[in-house]
Length: 93
Image (cartoon, rainbow, N blue to C red; front, side, top):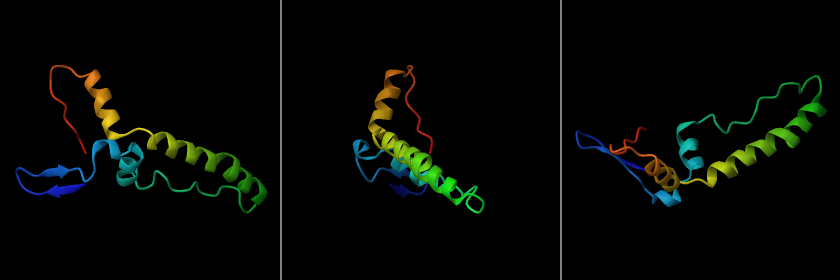
């Protein structure tokens, strides 16, 4: 994304909407979204911590990345247009 300052400024996409995934967008604006989960029982039960990380957290993180990576900005705009009223779309960043 490139930006232009001033009264007529705004943002221009650096790639086509079909090439920008929801995962790309969220990774750019929600910096903590994909931070690893904090250890909760590592000192008292390291085997439980390892099991939770490998069997639950890592699997869940990958599923979220895959799901968000499968939806593009183009998909979101297309879906919004299906539900659009007579007014034009407004994008908030």
